Image 1 (cartoon, rainbow, N blue to C red):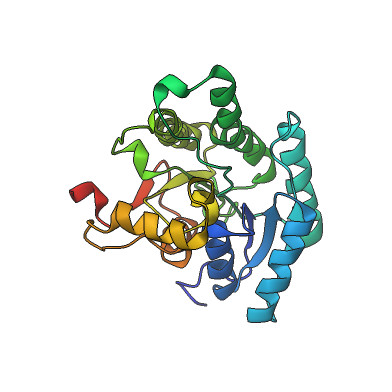
Image 2 (tube, rainbow, N blue to C red):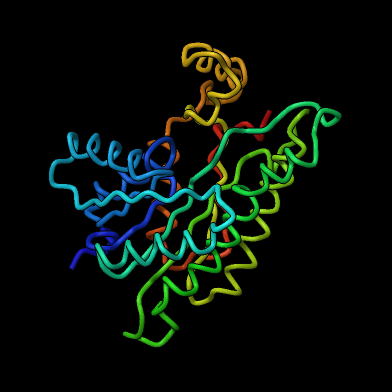
Length: 267
């Protein structure tokens, strides 16, 4: 029996898995021989992502499901998503949350209450409601008795702005720092389900698209942003995905935050 390929045969649900970091986590899970449910913002986006992934991994055990988390019915929508995932692919072992909407950054004097509440939906409400849903859908976690239960976990996503401030990022920093507190407290509230979070720095994904008019300008802008850090570049999704896979594998880790920031905290 293999000791280190702990994800083989496990069912991992990646919410936000159609692109960016989530897509990297999906591919890493597939390469670890896991069964994957990829949840996108719509069935169309999920189907397109699965089709693309199947071209690279023809034998992948993967199902795509759509789930629009932007609606007031988010609690019911998450429950329906996870119920459907279990019905199609079997008992869920791990849930990874990487879903995000466009970054809202800028001068504090330009911020409105409406904008703040809109941004809070995905960065405050969604992770909290997912924590609630995880208690139901990750039932059967190991409880410390030998041979009883399975290792089950939830992995959330925060950001390096939680640890290192920057002008114009007050609102996002508020949400990101709060996610670290949520992670620690959910680890107690959901025990024996493990709860952890990954704190990436700048990653080259479409999350930045709203800040730049083209992909080329996005890449140039990111390079200006991080060219001075020790790694000298923005991370790629497949690099950062390794941090998520670590949390999925380490059954001793809970209430932890792994930071993968290219050394930005040193500058």
